[in-house]
Structure formats: C-alpha cells, structure tokens
Length: 160
Ligand code: SF4
Image 1 (cartoon, protein in one colour):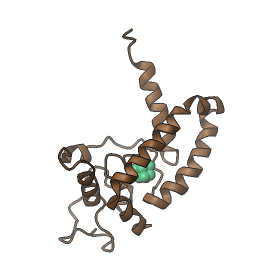
Image 2 (spheres, helix red, strand yellow):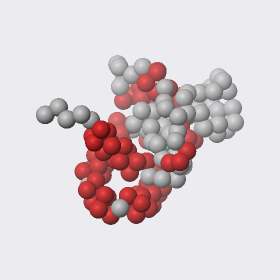
Image 3 (spheres, protein in one colour):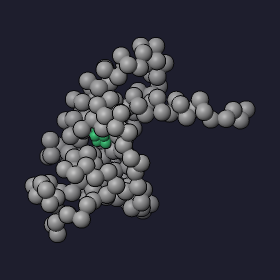
C-alpha cells in the first residue's frame, strides 16, 4: 500500500532498526531452518514475507532484498523495475512518468538513505546494485540471505 510505504521511509530509522533485528534473529535460528530443510522453511518464510513485507513495503518477492540499502524504499515498485536508479522519466515534481500518483521509488530511496546516514551516504552505494538472480523470484529473500551468509562463512579461509 503506497501510503504505508511512505510511512516506512518517513520513519526509516525506527523501521530499519526493527528490520535488522528481525533479520539477525532469523539468522540465529539457521540450525533450525537447516534441520527443517530449506525447501520447507522457504514455504514458511514466504508466507510471512509475502504478507508482512507485502503490506509494509509492497514487496514484489524478488528474492534478493536491497531494502536496507535503499532507505526502505522497494525499487521493485518501479513500473519499469529499474534496479539501478531512476530512468530519465522522473517528472519535475519527483513523480513517476508511468504512475504520476507515485513519487519515483529511487527518489524515495535517496530520501530514506539520507535520513539513515545523513553525513556518510553516497549515491553509488544506493544505485550500484548487482543484477537480480531471476531464479530467486518468489522465494524468501530472508532465507536466501541466511543461506548466502552461511556459504560465505564456509568459504572463508580458516585463520585460526
Ligand atoms: S524482497 Fe525484493 S521486492 Fe521484496 S521488498 Fe525486498 S527488494 Fe522489494
């Protein structure tokens, strides 16, 4: 819902904190998800993610969440699904050329990121994003992140 999305960006500090706590908590339970089997856990995660993030951020279940980099503005709500910044069609008042009733998701991303890190945020940090892995579409981005982090830990050389 667009009005809820705007509230999220307006109060990005609070909701970003809650988002990170939730993400961290879910990752602590990784042994449980592994025990359940990731395929089964994904169905559970998707149910909650689709409903909670769908309501709060109009999440489109891309499977590769970048909300924490984009000031809690979901870029997948761009009608052109621009993943690396705005197209050339932003109107002078900041609204979208396709959906004039909506502000450009990337202007909202910049606004949210500036509230979060007023001194240090730089445009490339927000705009340079890796391409989406379409195989992840419809899957839980929370669980994907937990599994990615786990893979990184396994690959890290043992310094001890
Ligand atoms: S998972 Fe993808 S579609 Fe959903 S909120 Fe995050 S970036 Fe947007």
